[in-house]
Image (tube, rainbow, N blue to C red):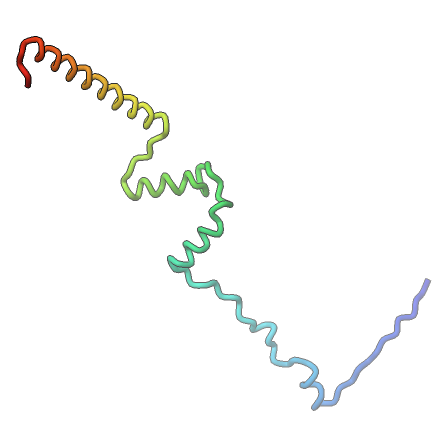
Amino acid sequence: MSEIIPIRNVVYSKDNFTKVVNTQFSELNSVPPTTPETTLENFFELYNELFNDIPREGDIDSHRFILEREAEYLGVRISDDNEIQALLQEITDLRQQLLEAETTNATLASQTGRIE
């Protein structure tokens, strides 16, 4: 069960030692990678790269979160489709009432002989 493992002893002369072995400890003094400076241009480049990776809905880290935060910052109100549809229907109803009132007014005016 014993196995013979050959050991090789390499000896360098004083002059060759510094040529073969790094004695400057450069591995210990390595400069950590620097992060690039964040600019608006860099931000929007990264945002565009990550746009499709951002979830649509969520309390944080989502398009909904960004939308609500921006709406708050800009002082605007976000309306949902149901509310918009209800307002459009109300506009349509009011236009219909106005048309009916104008038609009634025109009919009465023509019957009395007065045209306004």
